[in-house]
Image (tube, rainbow, N blue to C red; front, side):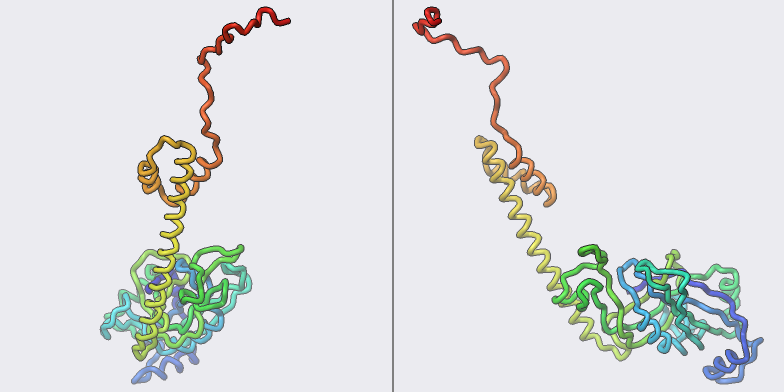
Length: 304
């Protein structure tokens, strides 16, 4: 899945140590005048809008994987769209800032370089001007663990749903055990506040698609089970409402009651059945009903 985020793309002041690192990736000796360097935040430990989060340990593993990886445009697979390369990474903990869980904010920062050639002139100026801030990274993780039960999220042993709250606990997936990082990309999409990541669960660099297929099949079966359970619950509530209507209004045709019940949403069925069952629908006598006449020959006039 592809997610993009607003990152920091700051021009970097090149040191001798950095230049030496860069030259380990080049075919010829590069000087400061030959290259443009900048920094970028690739991802962090914040829960994203898909209710997934990289653990701090995962960020440290990704830091190693991203060294030497290229930066491209819009995840293009063309070699001509390669723009920069990552030569150094660091996981940084900011104790003055907290994520949504109240934990110290931790992020993965990368130092990158690109040659000062005609093809890159426009991109360099856009980075300097702060126009390009959105980046997206591609990586693989082995597991996505449910924050509520500790099981593999989306598998049969876990019934929790991302974004749901269970006994006051938010359900989200902890992305653990990264297996590879592919690339990171400049993308032209609306900025989001924090890291958005391209994540391919159980899909390793050697093309192991079987695990991905197994996950999708398992998720499909789980959703089928939930749909079946939901339909059974709805049928039960429809029957409950029809019985309540017939009990309150015996003259109503039960077929008509069934048609009315079928038109209601499940929550409306529950509310209607509850309301009909609680209320007393016994009809009171009209106000203008004439009073009963005194019985004939009752001799009431002779009663004391």
